[in-house]
Length: 150
Image 1: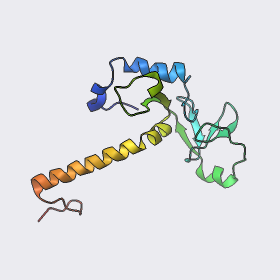
Image 2 (image 1 turned 90 degrees about the vertical axis):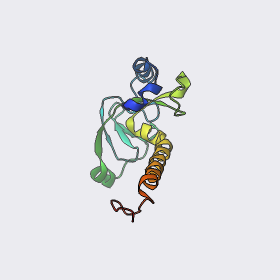
Image 3 (image 1 turned 30 degrees about the horizontal axis):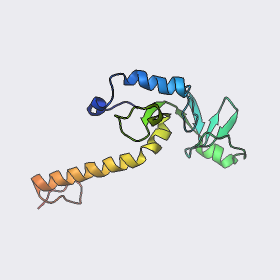
Image 4 (image 1 turned 180 degrees about the horizontal axis):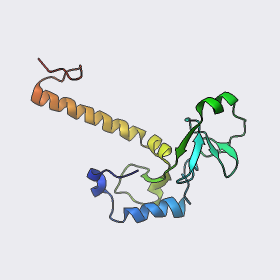
């Protein structure tokens, strides 16, 4: 995942090299959570299950091989294709903590799931700031989008 310009200051200057070492040397180009391969197109069902061409079988969201056969309606109605891109994530969300144990190579799906709580917190904070700015400069924040306070 690209780093936003306003957050780039929080990452070390050698972040590209550090990220490459985690993604390609340690993780060998696969997500450390679900084992999806970097820059490959994979078939998936949207719930974590995906087709691994190397083993000619389906895997679950944790990278484990599925033993049961998938139903035909799952395959025909829900199969999608995604290009997998690995990114290096901070397990504790602290960009200053670049210890090996704190860094993980995640595909975009696993990275979003890992960061879900942090994204919820930021979303709440952004909404809180907007409401506060509206109250400060325009009076009480209106619940109806686009309407002006009276």
